[in-house]
Image (cartoon, rainbow, N blue to C red; front, side, top):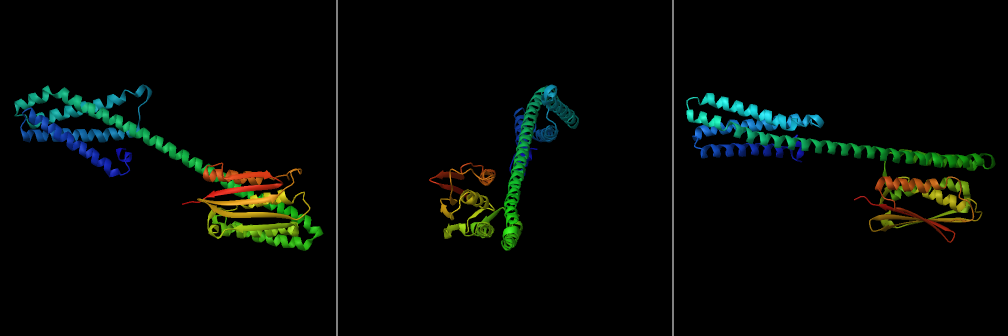
Length: 346
């Protein structure tokens, strides 16, 4: 567990081993200070350090899998103290047996038993607390990762749903137009079916790509507009003003089409004269900006379903960038304007 508390797992191993070395040197120094022979002090300190190291690993694994809570909180103190008591007891009996001929050292072991237990017990309690803190941090980190993953899956699902809604929405309108043309203008209906087929085939082929260049997106927009021209004929004029520097800038695919569809609805439904719709694409700071303008009659009721295009684009932008300021729309002097800002990925 301690190894997962650091970005480099080997770092924790060095820290634990370093603590063991410090424990050994500290014990050895104290034993020499109390007059114990160096050879005996080395063996004593080595065994004591090994017991400390063993306790660190045991408690790390115990509290890594089980965190006491409620009525079991006593285990936080109980287990480290129990382990340290058994360890010091084993340490004393082992060394008393090895150095049975050294009476002074035997007395030293007995008189310092509780001191050794207190020192080792305190160290093991601290180890247990650190193990629990690390374990809880790991659990919180895993919970955050799961939450982020669930949010990402939810976001992707909603984006996918919005993308899937665009095609049926456009397809429904196109089929309605084809149905209307079948009787009055069958040749135009046939032409529209072929153009619709080409458009859908192209967009389906690209469905796996989230982002495309503006130049590529405009090529599909022109296919879409060819279909709309069959519906509206010479009444609809589309003007593209695209700066050369933005043609290779990236944007989410099929993001402009619902805005143009919205402009066509606003501009052509209920208006009998010719209508010009303009699209201007340019760069501003680190944004690809698109400005779409169309005339509209403020006295006419909005066509049914007009709000879908703007709301779907606004929602997609929020899901992609977490921002609500990337799409603006305003109506002024019989002119409806939509301004779209697309941050460029670095």
